[in-house]
Image (cartoon, rainbow, N blue to C red):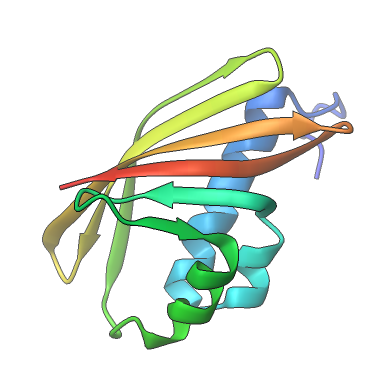
Length: 119
C-alpha cells in the first residue's frame, strides 16, 4: 500500500515490506507466504557450511519447533537493483542468530535472493 501521502513507495519501503513478510512467514510457519518472498534461485548459507535452497527451506519450515520469535532489524540499504537487510533473531528470549539478507530487483519486482546466517 502506498504511503499516506499518496506518493509511490520507495525501493527501501518495498524491501522492508518483503523483509517483514519474511519474518511474518516464520512467525506463522507459513511456507506459502515465504514462497512469495523468495526468488526461485534463492539460497542460504549457514555457519556450519550448509547451503539451503528455496525448496528445502519451504519444506523444513513446518518442522521448526514452536517458539516466540522476535526479529530485530539493525540495518537496511538499497544499492541500485540490490538491497540488504541485517538483523538478529531471538527465539523464546534467547538470541539464536544474526543474518544478512540480500534482495534483488528483477523485471521490476523485488525478491529475496540469499541470506547468510551467523551464530
